[in-house]
Each structure stands twice: as C-alpha cells, then as structure tokens.
Length: 359
Image 1 (cartoon, rainbow, N blue to C red):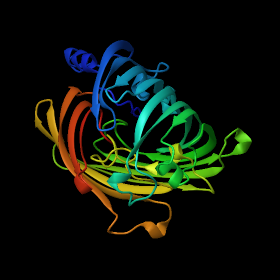
Image 2 (tube, helix red, strand yellow):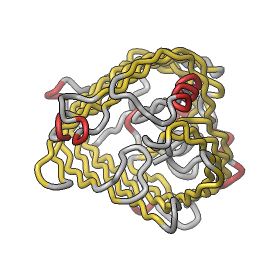
Image 3 (cartoon, helix red, strand yellow):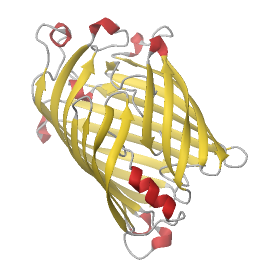
Image 4 (cartoon, rainbow, N blue to C red):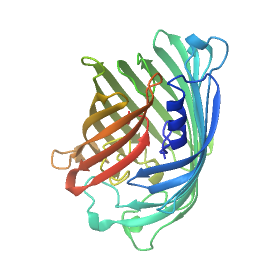
C-alpha cells in the first residue's frame, strides 16, 4: 500500500477532477470506491476517503494539504485499514507527514540476501499496527529540519515450521515491536511535491530504535533519498532518484530489513523479493506528453541488497526496464493516473495501476 504511498486508484475522483475543468477546490472531501493493481496485491478493492484543503488564510503561499483514509481488501487476501496525510502549515513553515494503519497480510519470502533462489519461496502471514509522524520545520530557503517518531507492532506472525525462517534464524519471527526516534535534514527546490518538472529533493534521515523507548530491538537506520527533475524542451522531463538505506546493529528484525521492488522502486520485482541489512537503487524516467491529457514514460533502474558491502557485486546486480502511459486527471495539480509495465532480471515482471508518479 502506498501513500506517501497509498496504492489505490480513485476512479471516481479522477472523473470528478476532469469534470471540474482542472480547477481544484481549496477544500473538498470525497468518499469513493477503490480499484488498484500491483504485483504484491493482485487486484485491490475497497473504499477510500480523500480530503484536500489549505491551512490558514495564505492560500497562495501555502501548499495544499491532503488526507487519506482507506479500507482495502485484495485478491491475495490482504487487508489494509489506514489514515495518512501531508499537512502544510501557513506559508509552509511546517510540514507534518503521518500515518496510522493496520495490516493483515500474507507475504512472499525467499530468505535474506541478494542471491536467494526462486525455489526458496515461502509464504508467511503477519498482523501489523503502525504509527509514524514526521514534522519538518522550514529553517532557511529550501532547507528543513525534522523530527520523526515511529512505532511498528507485529501482533502476530505465522510461518512454516522447519522452513527458511528457522534455517536462516530470521529475527522477528515471533511477535515484536520496534519504536524509534530520529531526525532529518531536507533540501527541496521541487516545483511540485507529487509530480515535479524541475528542481531537486535531498533528504537524510537517521532513526534510533532503542529498548529505552520500548522497542524489542536495538538498531539504527540511515536513509538517503536524492531526486532530480530536469525539463528538456516543452513538457518533457527526465526524473532521477538515488536511494540508500543502511541498518546497523546486532539484530535487524524481518519487517525492518532493507528491500525494494513494487510500484515505486525498481518495478518488476516483487517488493521484498530480496532483503538485507542495506540496499541501494538508482532509477530514472523520461516523461513525455503525447496528446492533450495523455502522456508516456520510459523507465529503468538498478540496485541491490546486502548484509555487508563485500556482498555487492556486478553479478548480483538487479535491474529492470519498462514503460507506461499517463492520464492527467487534473492538469493544474499535475495529478496523473499511471499504468506501467516492467520487466526485470531473471524473468521478473509486473503490471501496475496507480495514481501519482513513482517518485
């Protein structure tokens, strides 16, 4: 699921936006059916609410805030219930990003490492309660400093006895919780937070998971996210993202391991096909208009996971390529519905139906 990443396509919302002739109201709330498609979920159905609004009276100087709520069930027997949003305070002096959610999911697992064979596949099921908040303060032109808190409670987890979970001594195969506090530094010159055509985004986050806070595991997570958007000619954009996540500590539980794949990173791989203490990937897209509201993209990416730097190699490098179509349901707010097809290493592939750009 995505918000910041809610992996859902609001079909009636798209029709509404088009009917409004691209004039997006400052305040509006809709409750709509959900329909989505991703490699990890199959088809997803449910109900979602979307609210857009501006905080304070300085509408022209404050970005539009968004709040989502959803109840979604998938053909893979996955249940998601959650509320999430991005809140921009007057003149963008503060920004709050948050989520409260519940998941009851079966998920595929091939073990830990960047060379796990397809034959190692197992399916486990977990029940998760999740809460996080990330508050950022504008301190200088384009610079923000933030504080982040996070709670993840794995209430139940079920796996096959004698399988890969026990063979690899996977941490976190019993119910557990992780609690973290941390900070962030952000530099953001994008002209739009959801579908930028120019500018850059650089963010560094450091999270400390500690038993002092009530966590069952002690470890730290470093996240580096670099993005650049460059216009070429009229309405043509090259978008690039470099992402690195590094966990360090004696024991990293299953649901905190680094991974990629899915609808937003190295499409074509199942999200979590490869897991390790750290991962990196770089991906790029070429976005072009075709006719009126219709556009197209070509994309590619590569990356890998590892438990230590020495495990990285050219032979283990993962890659994917693909393309897709875009339909602008609201031009003024750069809101696109996207349909992507991706082909990845070793015959992996995926079809993705979503709203908003991948990055």
